[in-house]
Amino acid sequence: MDDTGTRVLESSLRLRWVDPVPQPGSTQLMSGDVTVDVRLDVRRWKGQQVRIYKRLASRGNTRVAVRWQSQGRLMPGQLLQGERTLVFAGLVTSDEIRDVLRLAVVADGSQLEGRQVLDFDFELEVGSP
Image (cartoon, helix red, strand yellow):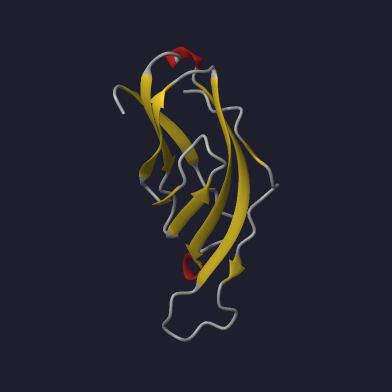
């Protein structure tokens, strides 16, 4: 499935400390929000029942959790690095599935080293939802 039309609306995700003065031995969490304009080219599956999954690739040692809200076309959800979750199940009725997702990202700040890349993609399976 072609998701090359998908764009992050901010130039980058800036994480901030959840607790500016974490207690010794506690998890040092960082969080931030980013908006993504999702455009999935599904014309090849028009008229078919499909399931679409959002996947967050596992990169490095930093633990990352992502939760998002949608504006209706895709399901809201959450996932951890290396996981995938269902975001659409049903009949494809148009050439493109489009939505805007507001992502909340939480990472273990004690494991962050410099710039990190969040590698999301979408997977499609044909069949009954």
